[in-house]
Each structure stands twice: as structure tokens, then as C-alpha cells.
Length: 122
Image 1 (spheres, rainbow, N blue to C red):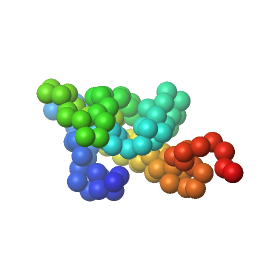
Image 2 (cartoon, helix red, strand yellow):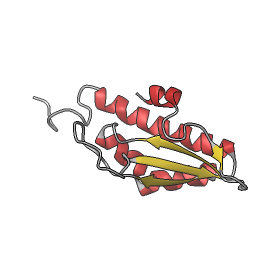
Image 3 (cartoon, rainbow, N blue to C red):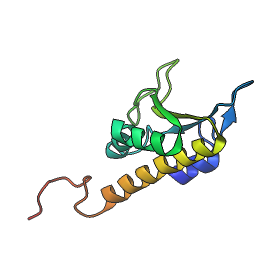
């Protein structure tokens, strides 16, 4: 799903500089990923570490829309806005966010992962 979003250019897709500005930005929709993956990439510590490493600023925008529910008029699905001083900083931040999501999705799919029904196995 993440590769498809990247290939399709979800949101603004790539980095785009605002007119007359040296800021670059990109968006990454996270609404349809598992709850743990969304939490991991929106957690204060994760965002601070990515920002410190890349120089990009990451803002959580939109609202979570459960599967099958209609998107209210004027609203957007949950996504991250990534802004940075260079195109490279935005790409690096987006890449790190994707790694965190992929790790969370992989953990959930493992037997006994946080996606399993119970805490203990018999």
C-alpha cells in the first residue's frame, strides 16, 4: 500500500516549493494504515527524532476516517504534512516515516504480533 501511494503520488506526491519561497513540502496519507503504524509515526518522540535528523517539520493533519465511513464535506483523511528547507530534507523525512510504517505493518503481520487477538498463547 505504501509503495502504491508513493508511485501514485498521494497528496502533493513529490516535493514542491511554494512560490517565492525556499520551503519544500510533501504529504503522506496515513489514514488507511493500522492504528499502531499511525500512532508510531504521529508520536511526539518519533516526529522529534525525524525532525532533528532531517531538518524537516512534520505536522499531522486531517482526521481519521474509519473504513466504510463517508468523508465529511470539507474534511481530509488523516495525513502528514512534511515541510523542509530543502527537497532532500523532505525526501529523507518521508523515507524515514515510510520505514516506521513498514516496520509496524510487518510486526503486526507476524504470529503473536500486536495484531493478534490475545496477549498470551496457550
